[in-house]
Image (cartoon, rainbow, N blue to C red; front, side, top):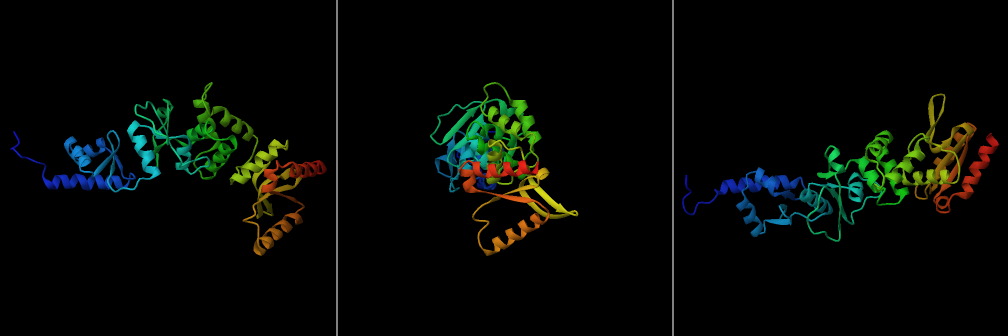
Length: 317
């Protein structure tokens, strides 16, 4: 049946489309696609009309922002992902997962093929790898799984930052060492960036019990191993008669040596002094020796404090 001359979409239908799109955009940082709009009842003509009238803004071809929605880093990442059917990756993925090495200074994604002009703040990696993994969303953004993110970080940031990210991911229950190792073996091939860095870290971690709980503790562990000391037990619990006396950052239990990293901000003031002294006294009563590691020790390579630990081990033996 022919439409009468001057026929237009009823206002109630157009209103329903706008309400539906607004509800969608509220949960997607203001970003949506033409395909999503049409799935909610919009026609191509309606999409074009809203673009002409400034109610929608084109971010990429067929990827729109609702007018008035704030332009945020998250919205820029999501728009790039939707435009390429890609996922946030590398430093952007680390930021989304809340891991060390993450950055909001750029938008970094991985997709099969990027056919559009690239911009200064946009880094695009082309790969088929991400299609092997189940789609993961965080903050409403398609993102690489944590395990893949850790591997990709190995190609983007220093090794010590990757190791800090690994510890943070495990402490936040985002992954496990075995899952990271499994992903590495699944993706590893000669020449793939990041594999060598992650493998080095995992191989070094194999004999170590426990996980560091902060970047400083990760740095302390690296310092101990770099100075030729044996792998310690991390987050070691000291108990007496089944009751918890203290949990120390690292320990050599067989030699009665407890290691504590002391940051200036958490160990200053009278209350901190009383608390730390009482704790050390309880450990001393059990015949344990506490060795303090500071930020200066880490900055200076830790040679002096490592020498102290080495001497204590020698005497205990």
